[in-house]
Image (cartoon, rainbow, N blue to C red):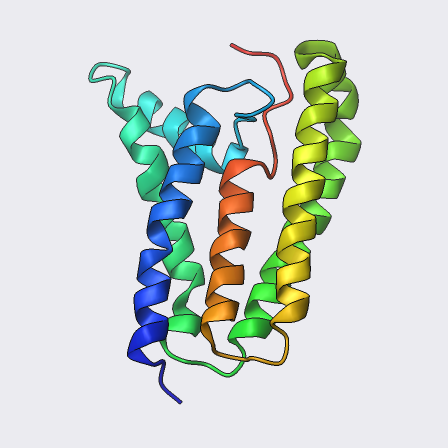
Length: 172
């Protein structure tokens, strides 16, 4: 089964919100509305290490890496696989469980370094984001390769790049 032209178009159109979510998460971090997702910040830190902070262009790497990860994870959608919805659910479940373990282990550091209000705000942002993605995937479960599955996949990666695994440690 191959993906329709419309589904491919929606997958590629999804790169814009994923890139914007990654940029906004890392540009003003740490802030409750810009939690500094490690999925967005770590590539920028790596680029600044490699670049030696000479060019100051590491902020460009954040959206580019986010889009590459999103496109790589979108291969089942691009080829029109019947298990595209299942793949999105597996990625969602892994991200959700990992994020829960992340918060459980780093909650005290978040309160210590970022403050109680920031930590609770970022946690609430994660709960809302994960709930919306989960609800969307639940509603799209019968539509194996449609635009609704692609929309849920885009929302999943926006959540991962924006709020999942927020920076809770000490700023350096």
